[in-house]
Amino acid sequence: MKSGFQIDSEINRRHTLKQAKEAALNALQEYEADWSSIHFIQLSEHVTFRIVAGEGEQFLLRIHPAGKPPEETNSELEWLSAMKRKGLILPEALPNREGAFVTETSTSCGKMFYATFLRWIEGERLDRGGLTEEAIRKMGAMMASLHEASVDFSPSAGFVRPSWGSSSFQRDWAHLGLNHRHFISDEAFGLYTMAATKVADRLSTLISHKRNYGMIHADLHNGNVVFRDGEPYPIDFGRCGFGYHLYDIAQSIMGLHPAQRVHFIEGYERVRPLDDEAMPKLECFFIMAIIEAYSFHAENPLETEGLIEEQPYAQAILRAYVNGAPFLFQPLEDC
Image (cartoon, rainbow, N blue to C red; front, side, top):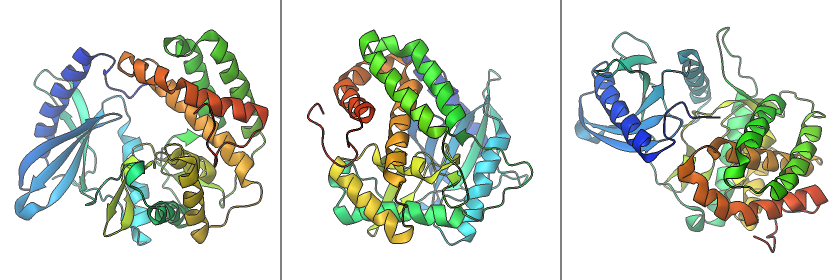
């Protein structure tokens, strides 16, 4: 599983960033914004830049790899537009001079990319140590509001977004199996295998309906939430797609401390109560999210040291899951 950019070494990362910066400058010529400065943010699934225009107005410019179909990006923007019509404060895409929301751009050497241009969502990111209990509850409520607004979303005929479930998990699991030796011992991988089997078995029994499944953010961790005047707002919808609401919750709480996860669920249930069978399913999706994350980073040698350091924590959670012990809302000794 790859981001679409060559970032598997520091040399490739610098080269990709150089190309993306040139593509960004060329893409800006296709928009009406009277911009004054451009600031690099990060290189991940796409390369992002903060654009400052006249009178302090700000925008987000995203550079997408050429291998990502523009139909997928247009579909992301379609969903965001539909959710904004429900009254949610979300990133809003702006068209280029020709009225298109996805812009083809390239470098002087002919390397092609796509670009999107969105209004900047003003706010401050908070790390988990800076989150109050009430801030976390508001994050949970925010996610529930997004799920509720999306219940009756009706996509267009050409709508294309990924689905996060049994098939995607099997792909990620197979990829991790080929690359785990970079940071997981063969002995420890036996534990991963037992956990993955349990996840796959659970996923095969789930039945989707509009109250538990639909379009989701799929990456709404606290790094993709900004706070303004005490209220949280979601950003970075690049991974959005179809999936279970509980999977969305699992992705969000994975980076929180166990006690903080309780507050997130409390906030979510202020808007949308969970059913009595939710917690075992949430545990399944939590383990699915862990395996997905390691699969995504497995081939990047720049990540290997950090992945090795995380293994005692990850394996304590996997062991608890395999043994049927609770782990979501209480700390584990091995962690």
